[in-house]
Image (cartoon, rainbow, N blue to C red; front, side, top):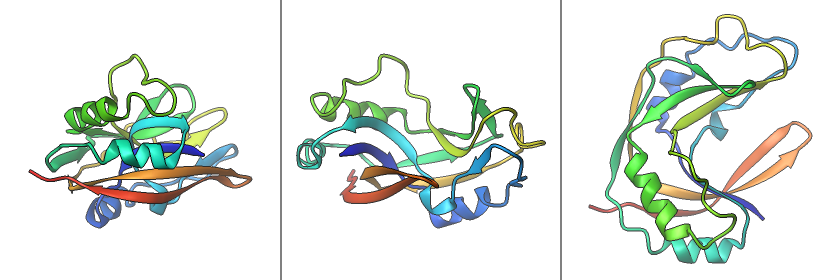
Length: 164
């Protein structure tokens, strides 16, 4: 099963981010707001029971995440909202899940929320759009990712509460 560990933005943060324009263009696929998340660790093909058991060992306090200040490109074909404040939480998740799924990536964590993917050019006016949202993160989720013809669908399998 294809899995990842993530945080979900609050309803208020989703409403703030959802105000961004979403111009339609050929080859552009906007992700629905109910699928928005910030991936803390991609596990790839992994056993959900092993992932849940590893996550049960997570010791981390709630944190404040800050989205913004503007949309930007990630690579050549993804438009994202940067999200700061999750670095230590991501490191804690990496530590407890190091033996689950694919090995952790050897690069710094870059918190972001994916808005759209595109083939050729980013949607007109979408890069650099101002956005600001803050949300409290008091849980992380274990998510299954399924690839369907219309795009990926993410199903929350389990929730893990953060405690001070």
